[in-house]
Each structure stands twice: as C-alpha cells, then as structure tokens.
Length: 52
Picture 1 (cartoon, one colour):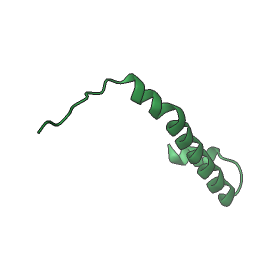
Picture 2 (tube, helix red, strand yellow; picture 1 turned 180 degrees about the vertical axis):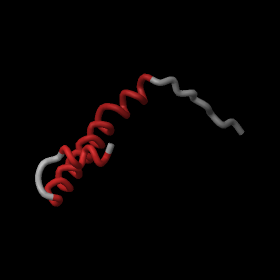
Picture 3 (cartoon, helix red, strand yellow; picture 1 turned 30 degrees about the vertical axis):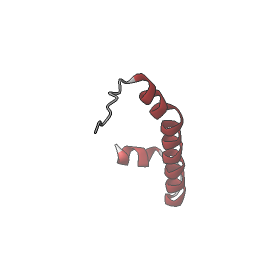
C-alpha cells in the first residue's frame, strides 16, 4: 500500500515527503476534531465509581 502511494505521488523525493507529511497531519486533525468526539458520544461508556 505504501509503495503504491509513493508511486502515485508526483515530483521528486523531497516533494513526496512534504506531501505525505501534510496528508498525515490532515488525517490526524480530522480524527481529533470530528472522529474521536463522535466516537466518544455514540459508544456506550460504562460509568464506574470506586467506593471506599
């Protein structure tokens, strides 16, 4: 998969690295902004308390 992605990207090696870094940052930003909060709201969380 990674080699296919590397071959699809245009340009020299340094440009491919820059594009990949930007893509990784974009994917992580989307996960943190929208995906993880949605998961936290929609999945059942067992609330437990510790009693002494």
